[in-house]
Structures are given as structure tokens and as C-alpha cells.
Length: 171
Image (tube, rainbow, N blue to C red):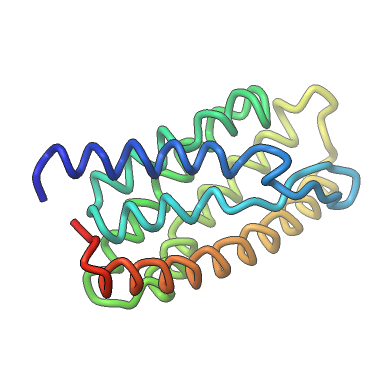
């Protein structure tokens, strides 16, 4: 893939990841006593990683998480790291697996990072620090939410990538 096509893919997917993280596209939900949104920010990150490779996945995840990290969920900068991990892992798994499975396995690589950073955020850095038990309950709820989001995003990536390949629109 040439640099121009790679840059276009990363720019488009990173912009789309940012757009998909904001209301009204993101659907507000409440988990325990915590407000969050159900979104598909992972979808363009998965597509970029699967079609463009590890560097495209990494950069798309990092740039695609900026709006979430600094506007949607202010002061939670570690979101960019989690999305970057997802993009890189999806790229590596996509070498041997269909997008559906590549995305799901990439989430298993990202999940420990999410677990640790979210727990530390809730217990040490949240303005109203949570008790460890409450933090674990919330982290568990968020992991379930994120698992659902990634499975749906992986399924959508499979359909979108198949369509792009059939239409000969891939890089």
C-alpha cells in the first residue's frame, strides 16, 4: 500500500472514530451509578488495522481516541492507548483470521489494559474516588459493555470489509 492511500485510510478512519464517540451518535446508558455511552468508536479502528496493518491500526486508534479522551470523557487520556492496542492487535490477528474473529481476539488483548487503567482511574484519580469493591463492580460492567461493542463492531467490520473487497475498493 502506498503512503498516500495509507494516510487517507488513517485520516478517514480516525475522523470517523472520533465522530462515532460523541452524542447523539453515542447512545447514553447508566451502569451502576456511572453515566457512559454505547458507541462504535472501535469499528473504524478495527477496519484500519485489518485493512492497513499494525501501523494504521495504531495511529488510527491513537488519533481516533482523542475526542473521547479529552472531550467526551475529560481527563481520561488512557483511552487513546486502549484503542491503539486494539488497532494493532486486530491487524496481527487479521493476517490469519476473518475480521469478526480478529476483532474479538484484539479485544482480549486490549481488555487487561482497560481493566487496569479503569480500576486505577476510579480508585485513585476520579474526583470522587471509589471504594475498591465499587470500582471492581463498575469495571466489570464496563468490560461487559465494551465486549458487546467490540463484538458488534467486529461483525460490522466483517460485513463492511467483505463489501469493500467485493467492490474492489480496498487498498
